[in-house]
Image (cartoon, rainbow, N blue to C red):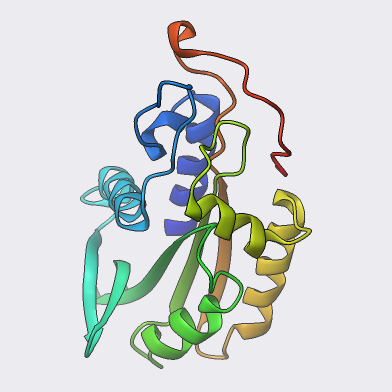
Length: 204
């Protein structure tokens, strides 16, 4: 249920021309910079709350404490009634990363699984990466870091790599899934702001 909702968020981000929601204000050169990971988590949590809270008995919380100086980006708890009417809660940890994060290929194991998921308590994990590569990303340190971390990967190959990693890391008592959200701008914003930037390899 939570994974499907995130998939809908990803689709709407592209099909409804809402890419600007995950980007900061445009610069004079009509280049932009991505929102930070805290803002991305907030946007995704708001979407989950809107879609799932109330109608599906899902509680969505942000920055949930799981230990000293350890916080889950988003925690969703699904209350699933059994035959007798009692609820059997299903706990889902969601870790959100921007494509510039220097631990993007390791954080699913070292952070989400090893630090945040606890046997019998938080049995499911979702690793969500926002993929911002496009021609409209302004030159900045995060973009430089993202290019280094991307290596030779484009969007499909990065998605395949993380999905395989999630499958490998999944434990008997739980399940890990990876989601890459295409957050690149395609120029679908007000014509008065639109210019054609120099091509520089978007790697979508």
